[in-house]
Length: 386
Image 1 (cartoon, rainbow, N blue to C red):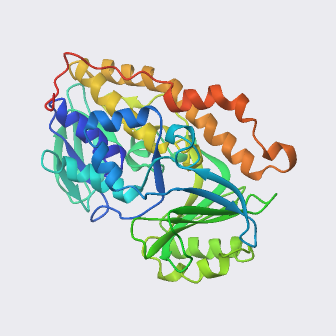
Image 2 (cartoon, one colour; image 1 turned 120 degrees about the horizontal axis):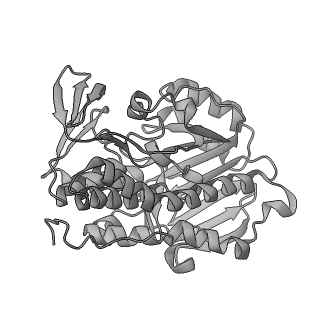
């Protein structure tokens, strides 16, 4: 498996429980810390419970009490509580930094799963019985299945399915975030300023380390051609786009060059008509990224991991039947969440009445995006933790 962020270790958890021997390769030298806050809503919370990780995940949460939207002078316009909508609202009751969730998943699986860091899949060829893999380090191994869990810019997807331009859909928005010293008085409340009519925003959120916070910016961009590895180019772009945004932006930007965990990328979706090719499959953002604006990227990864491992094991590891069952169960759930992501981007850039979504009319879509999928029990399928 390629990728050790969320989808990869989550799938490793379930494959190992179903009796498979699992290797996860990650091109980074170790787990990536920090990152954006990710949420678990709806059926995703049931997957976490079935993993036996509810206590560990909640212990690592940001413990955010709620959110305030403010004007340029800091005056509160709206308030949302983490308890709204049963914990599935604007601020979820399970909110955790991406890096902290990755650490929980890694700690849970490291004893039974082989992790190979600072390496990547350079080449692969498959036949009817397996997949021959050559790593960038020069090592060569053979596997029954290979799964790409390596994110929006998946190298494995490009290697097997074709160039990224064929599948990645830019939604016209760019996000950036990085940690900053907590000189802003953050105390369990997420604070966001949205500039009306421009699609630009700035925000600060608390994290478990009360001495620091997470800064967040978004801005519209019809085109996006900055390489995702060009950190200095990304920082220049951010300054050019938000330097005049107002609110606390100058103070937040003052910490940009000192940030150890800066990240910037386009808001995009991955749209594919199939997520497998022979013995090679995809999961998470590599297969069906719904964009951060869906609020469900982690949910899709965790639900997808549960279903992919279950379907493969139920099919007695036949890749054709296993991948087919996984796609059949996941497809409508993915489509609902991708629609939510697109609508959220549209609302953020809209003005006037169009900027106020009709929540009542959206409720059927929201319900499908949070709970619109069945989680089979997979009775009779091996489970080492049963």
